[in-house]
Length: 164
Image (cartoon, rainbow, N blue to C red; front, top):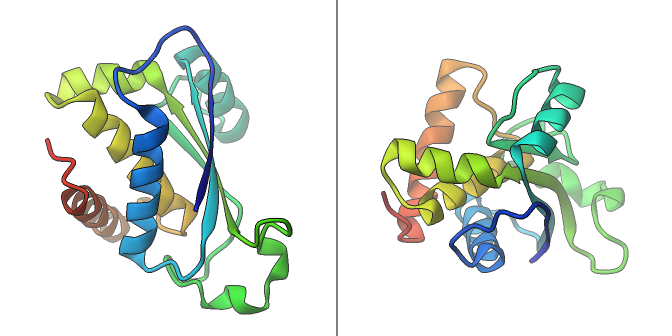
């Protein structure tokens, strides 16, 4: 499993961001039963940059906490069976499944941690778990989907012992 990690902006999170990202991505993929080694790109940025991306890609004119850019379209969330005949979904050099990109606002991590009364580590891990689920086909547009995602996020973080 590979997390390609990049950080921009002067603000630094008070956590070991790369190490936590690797732990949560691996934990989330193990939890949902991804049968492949995988790679994810993670960018930590500032509100101004994520605002621009949110406007460009989602036509929402405000900063957000996390954006997910999946590389694959799943017929069923968390079902990787369709990849058996999909060589283009794998990095030709590493052989890893290319899941997609995650962008997180460092400013939102800190603000939301304070707002929700938990640590920046927990908020950061939550956003990564949430985004990995998106990269694996999960969504929360419908109430039933939202409940499934919330349960999975909670269980991933509990298994990793990253609690409120």
